[in-house]
Image (cartoon, rainbow, N blue to C red; front, side, top):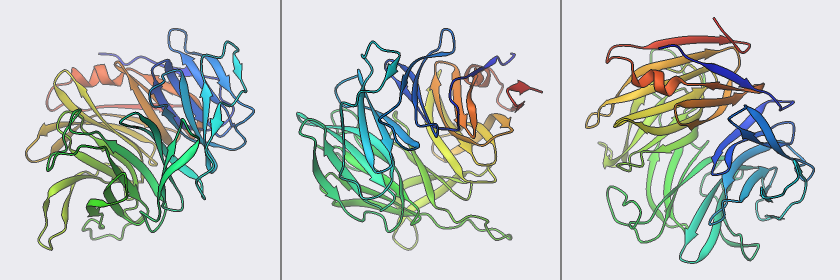
Length: 353
């Protein structure tokens, strides 16, 4: 099966973040803009600019309102209304001012009737900001001793129970450059933690295993993290010989830091999708759930470093150290490969060779 691909053009600088929003694929860039794309024609139909005064660091949905979008910029989370009829959106709905350092990730949180967003930053703090009152609900200070790079929201038991215990309120999973992953409740009380140690090797690691991104299997609650050393680890509920929460390496095909990691299901197959600073995008399929055995099924070799990606249907949209966004239908191709097949594609400057 042949792979089809295209380039979405519009940004003037590197693409830093992407989001599969209910209104369409959205991308943020170092050109200080956010663009909403019409995938039928591969063109941007809206551009958010003006109020964004620095690089876009992250994008997120808004809790309880699919017409809004959250944009991370410097130390602020900015809220914009995509219903604006203008092609160029300059009006800011509101913005947070409770983080003391650069924002790295924003996630929506719904607790009872409250609409909150969780924001993590370079200081290692996690802020829960009330979108309706424009006030910080709680600041969980110094969750990490260094940069907090990513957070995930673990839903309450009514939506999806966590493997080892039931929860009545959402939990926050966070990873950082202190080589740690923490699971805390909304009051900052620790529930579990994992320490990410260097993998055994005869060669010294170029990069320490700083945690760069997190992923969760929505079907069974399994948790994964991507690290700066290029490895992807499974965060187990069991304990190791020292009594700490066990961490199991499951994928180590990348030669540089993981930039994005997502868990995806297609035709009863569990896939882990990863992009990294070695200019690779890889798809691994889970072959043995009990042993956490993953087999590489497909990879894209780029001539630029991918920072982020989203999956829409069978298409992957990759953004990174390029002003264009690569669109490729590698998910469909991956599903039709046989058990031993691995497909490799090299894409250079928007052309496949």
